[in-house]
Length: 341
Ligand code: SF4
Image (cartoon, rainbow, N blue to C red; front, side):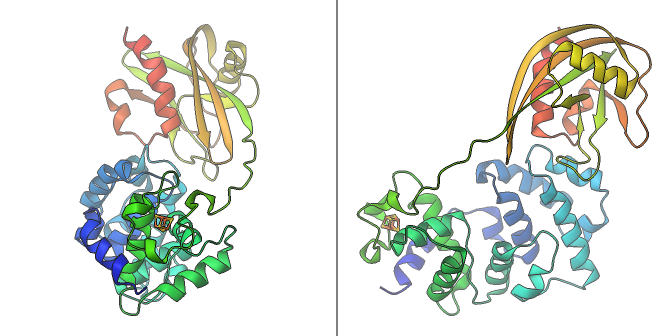
């Protein structure tokens, strides 16, 4: 079977996503980084806001990182935002986007998949790409239950029709997203069905790997309010969610009111007079599930951050525009109704 059936299907059925309607290496890079680990529906408003403020690599390269994190706030995996800014700075320093896979790979945060996407989609280079959707489609198409990285990349490369890599790669990904889905694939309307060796038992490909149990961890945080302002602290540079703002608290050393009071005293020199439990927020990170107990706190004293730490009183109406993690938003949502009441 030639490549025509899949390309025809793509031409007729692909979703008119904004980075497909107007293609450039910059738009491809931003969209690919945003779409990693994130649903497209979630990405769309972020992409629009991001492009409105940073229409070029130059605009992002010159922006304060704080502003980049604000626009990324809630999208998760914040290292992507930092890498994107570093990549933009490298593009500006290099006088434009590299046009080869090797050159693109040298940009911060750009792995083989993203390099393949920019090279093929924006520059028309005959090169493959492999993401989760492509992996599933190829595994089923060739009835390969245990595809290795090497197998996937060589299988993907062998199938790229010369001169059509942009549409072909996007067609494979779109087929995986819309038809050859993880559960209940719609083989009856699949353009490659006649050639598919896994069609009799698609869900057997790729074979499921045993899942490791995700470690569980406890945390505690407190909503400290004065007038119309709430106290926030900034996470240190370098670790998880680095540079984002959140309610003061700590992980891994108890999650009751006493643990919170001990932390607020040690870290911010605040004495807790009263702490009312608001509930617990469960949040899943890549390798960790965090259970954060949230308290509304009445405290005495003037908060003082330790050396190197940052704190800030933020007006309640300004919280939405701040660079906050999704976890921080969840904990604030739990505490805030009581604060307003
Ligand atoms: S026929 Fe079914 S299993 Fe094969 S590629 Fe199409 S949707 Fe996937």
